[in-house]
Image (cartoon, rainbow, N blue to C red):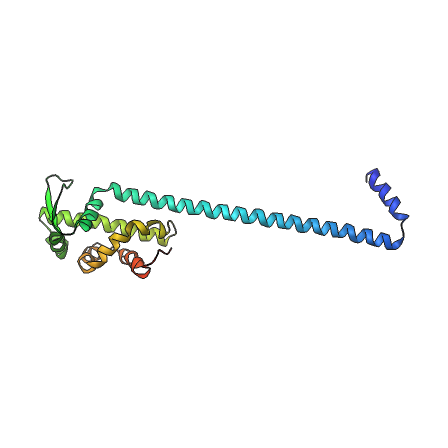
Length: 202
C-alpha cells in the first residue's frame, strides 16, 4: 500500500462515523459512475464498429453487382439480345461471332423464339436463340446472387427495370427460352419488378 493511501486511512480514522459513511458512499458512487461511463463507452464503440461493418458489407455488395453488370456488358451475345429488346420495329444488322451479318427485326425474334431450339436451324434463328439464351443465363445468375445475399436487388434495379418491362410485355415469347434452358430463377427475377413497381426491394 502506498504511503499516501496509508496516510489517507489514518486521517480518515480520525473522522466522525457519519463523515466516514459519507466518504464510503462517495467512493462507491464514483466507482459505480466510472463503471457506467466505461460501459457507455464500450456500447458506443461497438455501435460504431457495427455501423462500419454494415457499411463495408453494403459497399462490397454494390461492388459485386457492378462487376456482374460489367460482365454482361462485356458479353456481345447478351448485349445483342438487349439491343434486340431495345430496337422494337424495323430490322437492324448484327454481326454474330461465327462471322457474317444478319438483319433481325422484332418479328424475326418472335418467330425464332416461337420455335423449339432444335428447329431453330437457320443462321438468323440460331443467332436470336443464342443471344437470348445468354441474356437469360445472366438474369438467372443475378437472381441467384440476390437470394444468396451476394448482392442487393436495388443495385441492379435501375439497370434492368426497362428491359424487365420489355420482356414482361412479351413474356410468352421469351418463356420458351427460359423453360427450355431451365433458367428457373429468371421468372422470379422478373417478378421482382412487377411486384415492386415503385422501387426496389432486397
